[in-house]
Image: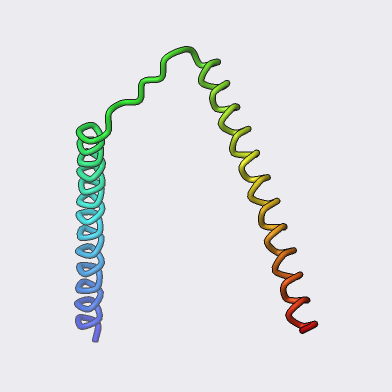
Amino acid sequence: MGDEEKRNRAITARRQHLKSIMLQIAATELEKEEGRREAEKQNYLSGHCPPLHLPGSMSEVQELCGQLHAKIDAAEEEKYDMEVRVQKSAKELEDMNQKL
């Protein structure tokens, strides 16, 4: 049994070694694939999306962002007000229908 046990341990160790080698190979292949995908993405974006050119300084860009945020806030407020009006009208219609 001693020889058989040593043989089984050797087989198990070899399997573990082969598994670790396969995992290392798979990890390097995965890294290569990720690098290739990133390069393809950059090539596609450079070919299909022109670079963004904003005239002016950073303060002008920040001011533009502030204006856009203010417009978004105003639109959201208006949307909320309209939703409240619609809900109120729907409730009034429901009440009128119940009275009939």
